[in-house]
Image 1 (cartoon, rainbow, N blue to C red):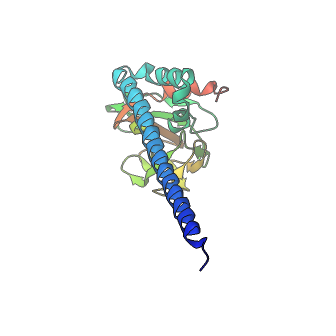
Image 2 (image 1 turned 30 degrees about the vertical axis):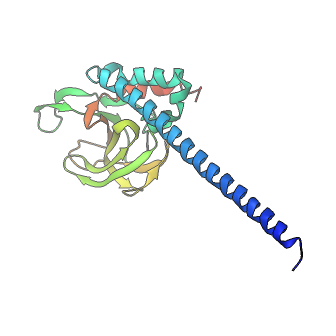
Image 3 (image 1 turned 120 degrees about the horizontal axis):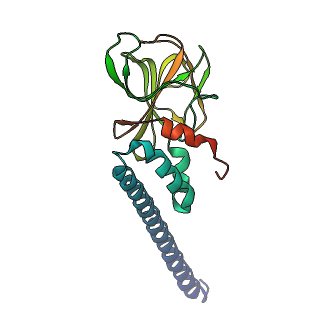
Length: 218
């Protein structure tokens, strides 16, 4: 045994203690950083949810208000793609608007919860924002339908589809191809029925579709 062995053991022990302290500090910093990021994210989400709540009864301006908020505040910018500000079709021509109307099949006055967009059979349908597919299948009246959940309790619905090319549980990004348009369900001809809901309450999609013309800053 060397006379330097006790010294080496002490130095080694000290190094191990220092390494242990560094590891603890690293873990603490990561944990605090994670809490801070989550706190800021939750704060931003609450602020945006308050905006939505304040404009819930003014759905004609809600989309424009959110668009302006996202565009003018750097801290909200990462929410942009997670909200339905994209177009579900390459070309947007509205055949039937949101609101009360005579139902085209039975003639009964009924509230139309979305817009009907002109489309031929098998035109490509795209998701209007990042989200999770929460429904794929047949829905009474809607025919073959897709529902996608986005940030801030937004849901988009795409109906009367011919073919669905995604499945429930899929994570999709804005602009992803999700289906082909069709004429399934209660429909007088090929078109895309498109809805936007917040907390399961429908809002006018036109407010969001019209804003899709100026995305140059994103």
